[in-house]
Amino acid sequence: MAERLDKLHLDGYSILQDKKKFCYGIDAVLLADFALKNTKSRIKDFETNKDFLFIDLGTGNGIIPILLAAKTGPRVKIKGIEIQTEIAEMACRSVKINSLEERIEILEGDIKKIPQNLKGGFAQAVVSNPPYMVVSQGRQSDNFAKMVARQEILCCLEDVVRAADFLLEDGGNFFMIHRAGRLNDIFFALEKSGFKNFFWQNVKPFKEKDATMVLIMAKKNLAQKNKTEISEGDEKVQLEDLIIYDEEGKYTQKILEIYGRSS
Image 1 (cartoon, rainbow, N blue to C red):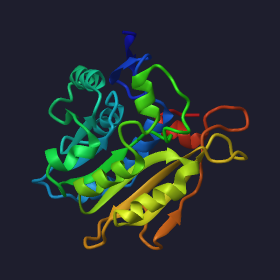
Image 2 (image 1 turned 45 degrees about the horizontal axis):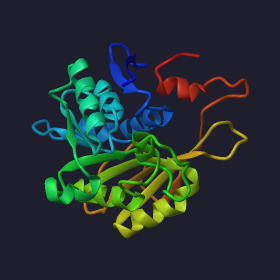
Image 3 (image 1 turned 60 degrees about the vertical axis):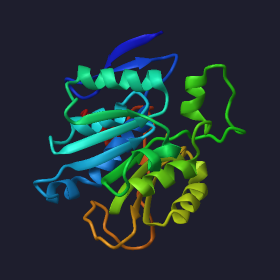
């Protein structure tokens, strides 16, 4: 094993990582920030006698649950679901290292079998940073753990969307980051599962470059109107592009703010 303990960009928090299995990237940081910015009003207005629950599908080493917990109060709880035993166990140890056992629960399980193991309609928000590549398009490797993280070997896009639909309460929000080139596939999968009110934000490495990633927010049904930081309106709304680097190759101000740094 090549396990190491890395400090996060948030003071006082660390995470276990294994470069031979899974190490988080900027996509996880962007997704956690996107989800928090668009749930903070709901969290603030939520019933004082009830916890606000996030579920992270394909949690990997637990980075997204830790980021969510670090920036919210004790009434926010997070469940992370991971199919690979060793990685789920590593995520559990990271939770303990950060003394977040009362707020984060890591569950080992298959996203495709969630309806058999969990009750439906009980989460206020679901997040996912799923494998981006279909198997036929991805680069092949002998490293199975990395292949699972990058390619749709154990679950596909539609599996993730179906699981989110099952877990969310009516009016709950699903947040995902994915390859920008699969936006049409994403819309198709969301519409097939009955999601409405899509908001997406292209993520570009540089202003003049094409988007490489896309952040998505979709609402389950509209029977219950919930506040978000994005105003409701058209069914599909494109948000202002998020640019990672400026002309000098340094993080833009928005990215620095996401990481909690000053320019």
